[in-house]
Length: 541
Image (cartoon, rainbow, N blue to C red):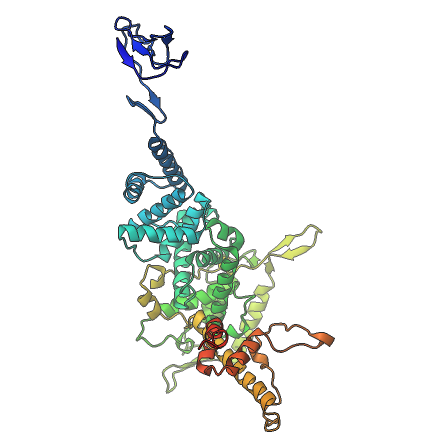
């Protein structure tokens, strides 16, 4: 007989013994057979294999299922769930990185999914593949981008890793593949739209619209702009949500992109008529001009419009071949049908026209009035048979179709180097018709000038109050902040309906001037630090 230290289930005494003959565990005091240690696997009869204890997620001869085993099992389930939702295939590499960071303990709690997302981001960036942080945040659901970014920084610091430079071109390619708006297009069409997007992205980089900013809002703005160029009407809100970008910021980037296109268009002969409202309709011609300028070498001259030559016969032919706007019954039999008015078979032999070589670099074409009259009459007779395409509305009235310049001419060539992946230095060397300063630099300069004017106005106000008799009122007739400094902000009305022209910034500037703070320091705009240093701590100093 072998004694056992367990308690009897009946009398609760430690008098358990095992019978050598039957192998059962018995209580020597009360004689009750203990059944918790008498498991018999009913497999293959009494002489079959013994049963084993089973734990969650695995089977084997393990005595008990510990807390560590449960923790590791749940952690692996979390890893598989997050990687499957993100569509990642490098699960083993992600597990190995987490195992190295946690010393094989993995973990539980709200911090562990954030660690998994950070390791997913680091592994993909190491393998030169892109996955936006916002997409990981949307899958995890328990943190924001800032918290995920802090976790990524801690992972990189712990593993002593350095990620490659962020590639916005790959971000655009990834967004175009995942965006449902572009899936309906054929492969060739999608490749052309991708080149257009890369071209516009490089232009935005040259205009410093991406410097120091989040990349996804600009990607969403470019996707919406390219879709509109190709006749697909999409809402920028929908595109921004698909690429996990902030909607308001995406709209702001879209506005900045159009504003810079308007500035580029000022170099065209008709550029003065273009504004923010009609730039999208004229964007193909503007982009064609930008593409032509970008193909010129930095030291090459001849990019001005004055040195470009146009074949007006081809221009008019293209205008008459616009099937979206016009149609004709017997038009199209001859491709050069409408250009015959501008054909001059023999410049020297035709009595109606002559060519004067002149003394300059180029000659002048002279056409007689009779020949011009005949051209106009023939064109007028042919135009009478040209009917505009119309649509029938609900009320039975005809309404003209929307004119779409993209459907009537092949404006995109795709031969510019800006359609390929370039370094930032190469992008800045290209000429796209307009060179812009960084928006943050321009805003800083404007704010600097605004503070200088506010300081000057505050000094005049202080001088008038402290020395009213010596103040020259002719030079300080306007003691308020200048109108161009107010930035168009509405002022609060005081008692009696009078508008107050002073704001909190004017009061702070006056306070700092009274405490003899240098104007150079006030112009920098660090008001809180200056108040803490010169006003609130002035007694201790």
